[in-house]
Image (cartoon, rainbow, N blue to C red; front, side, top):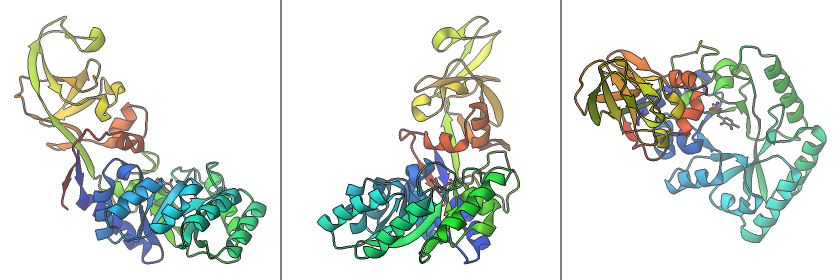
Length: 365
Ligand SMILES: *Cc1c(COP(=O)(O)O)cnc(C)c1O
């Protein structure tokens, strides 16, 4: 796996220019930087001027702290309240969406630390995942926070959109309205009021608030897949995936390839073996898809194995020849979106499931 850090810097810089200082940009580097490597990605985002980072888990935040990042870090998921003191001690901001979480966290903080915990209030305006859903519950929590300022510093309030990447904005507008109604319940606006994932910032920047949570687009991927092709600037994909032929042979009519012997040669065929399989995150259902060899699309024939798969070559090709699974070769390109389309999923999922067995190489540091 090759990750072009210049592409990440470009995507972040373009977005920061659009924000024109009106909103801070927090780079979302959860799930090991969407599979790209959290620390290297965070460094690139830092160089490009990102204000802070978002992750999903406290452990992911601590990984960044261990790598000496001093920017604000927000954990977007619900952390066990008995880890509140660890978060506070490491200056990590946590998300909560219920009064019971606050009271449980307060116990841990009182027992273990003198440092107040920075918290962001999650509002569930229609995502149906985490957060306060009505004004009464939110008011109770706000009262509790006001009475316990020695334990909690209310740093943010936010929501998450379910349909920001869709052309029809009806549901989006409903969520935005509900958010404004709920925020109005708070006695005072916290430092960060934020609603925007990549899709919201790219296509609904008017409601950005003063901070955005910029995720998939920083990796150069269109959040809508092919849904909304229009972008305010071209995104540069950072990730490419290449391998090389480890074995090449000629087979003849009727000869089979791979488990189940599901593929049979029609005549004389050159077959190349690629040392990568589903244990690397190259899905079994990519059988029948193609890779590039010298710019020529070559079909994946037979079942994909755990560690290897086979392709049909147009001609005898030397062992060691580069095989491009994702990326460009001689002017031909296979995008993550192409792979996602063929395997009936989204590029987000494909990036995250590329496993640690794949060596990551970083270029343009
Ligand atoms: C993952 C996540 C993001 C980033 O979303 P992208 O679509 O990758 O930009 C933003 N906010 C929350 C709450 C998330 O969970």
